[in-house]
Image 1 (cartoon, rainbow, N blue to C red):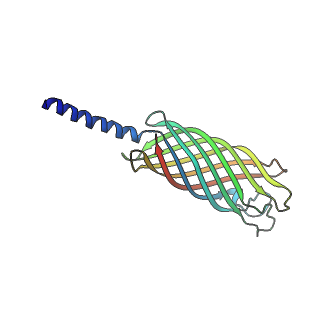
Image 2: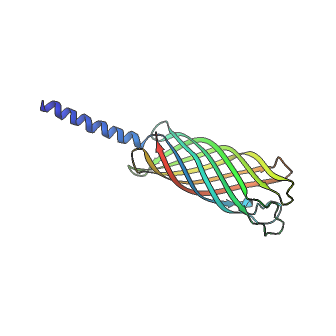
Image 3: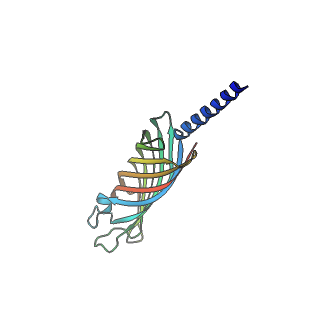
Length: 199
């Protein structure tokens, strides 16, 4: 009887240990919000190429990481953001905020930092939508283009099902407007914090 009890206790601990390990290696879905920082010509003021974009806000509405094994997986992001425009600059072409949306897909490489924390490196390609209204009120900048997206996600296991998420995202492309002959280089960096849910 005692031997059966010992075996049951051992199996219980073994099962709990496996469950904890699997929880740390599971796929996840997260949401986050943070700071959007325009770079390059997108954030430059004046001139024919300057976007006059100021710092804004970004929402990572979908940050999906599907684990194939402990070190490799597939990632997908859905990002939307807004950058105010500095209309006080001479030669500013647009008056409304820049709005952007990016959906991307690519591989995910996972590096363990400790038993509870991981870093996911995600080089991706995707589709970018960029929009702003012009100063003359009759035309607008609206365009879509393929973009390069490089994302880094830090995950800390708070609970078997819940992660603390911190993202750093870089996006780069050049978008041609479907409304006029304008083009706009779009380079943007963002930092965001949120929660992830293992599944």
